[in-house]
Length: 185
Ligand code: MG
Image 1 (cartoon, rainbow, N blue to C red):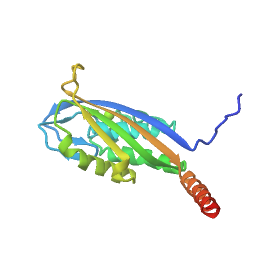
Image 2 (image 1 turned 180 degrees about the vertical axis):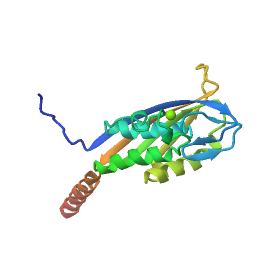
Image 3 (image 1 turned 90 degrees about the vertical axis):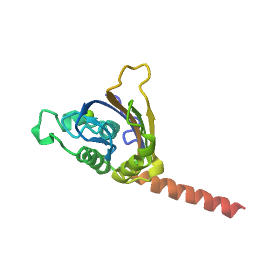
């Protein structure tokens, strides 16, 4: 068996994707925020497609089992569950492995409602859930032109993690460098 060249990477990247169908008469939640709309997203839990994609991105970055494996839709325990529970479990796994979230970037694809007016609230809520600044949460919304997905919400998420110790090492290395530079000048 080949010896791993980088057994403990300083950074890890994860990608998450999810899609849910709109249904009449249920509340709409995106990124942990309730949005006013005539339809919500169906699913076994609260249907929060963005939190599901973020959860899978975090789990993917850790090469952990995905959201469907950890929280199977067949388990009645998760019926109507707040998707924040899934995100927190993924984040706990990230932190237990010594990593922290660096930043994430998300794309939402849906015909309605318009996300622009709600984007600051969604970014703030996601940042709060992840324990990062809101300028570390990118959120873009697109309409599904040419995709024939007028009744579907899709989310793509990319997340970057870094070893918690890395930032300290990098800081101290940078500090040493700046001290050496200052001493030379
Ligand atoms: Mg889902």
